[in-house]
Image (tube, rainbow, N blue to C red; front, side, top):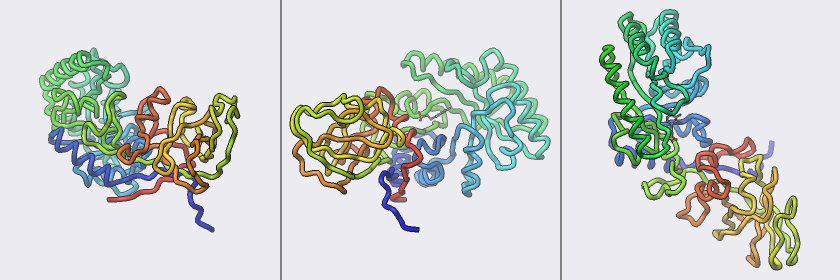
Length: 374
Ligand SMILES: *Cc1c(COP(=O)(O)O)cnc(C)c1O
């Protein structure tokens, strides 16, 4: 089989991931840090990212669901892994067999985890999650006293070990985050009254870890910041000493010259304001390029930024490069490290009315990942 040069690739700089974790370790200063590698490591590849994050000083890993946790175990990763999102009939036996720690969000899950521990013959490691106001998962505040007592009873029965208590912030504004931290403190006090003494207490994800010291407790759960993407739409990752790990690249596959007034791409939403060269780039919304960014985002070709002309199609975008001597085969960077002059994931997010998280996570299946560093 011949090796084709990929038409589009995401280059993942594992040194950037490792360096970002080192930086976050230093600046946040908590005793523990969970590197969150759910959703295939925010599109970067869960297993290589997990390894780089552990090398950078993360001591634990976090994922949403059990399948993601098992993927890490299947790859031979032995660090503690926490999974916190389950359906109504989760396979806690498999979690225990794979030594996966379980985030617990309901009283029923306390019971199910204890029952699995009894069947498998292993003590289950649980992190109890309190809903402090996000209103997604987490034990409802009214159920919390009962949940902590049930968890304590399961500890005494030798079935469960409550290693962590946690919650998640809505990030609405500073005031509401502080209100959630207050509710969390009340929940911790209730847990202590029930006799629980968790080793790990964690509330903050990237945003609060970087900006709300009160929310750090002794562990933070770091996702987006580790990838060098900002948790805040209006602030760049460089403000926090973070470098983007992902560069989305392609190359020019055709060029043509069009006269002033010629329409470009579906619906002719762009008409050339003057004679211009067009560069055809084989990436589209199937690859995760947001159609919403049509006519708004820029790409970097040969180190210079050029606008996208007209609509993003399924497989292609067209860039209007004016009189620049752009040629077939030239490198195109859709987003990467702005320190190199490329647009950032944040630039794309602004152009598409979304957040950097979505830009890196949504890459399609045709985008090959290539790893450099670490
Ligand atoms: C995704 C997630 C995180 C990580 O959030 P970032 O903002 O990417 O750091 C942390 N905790 C929970 C519960 C999550 O679902």
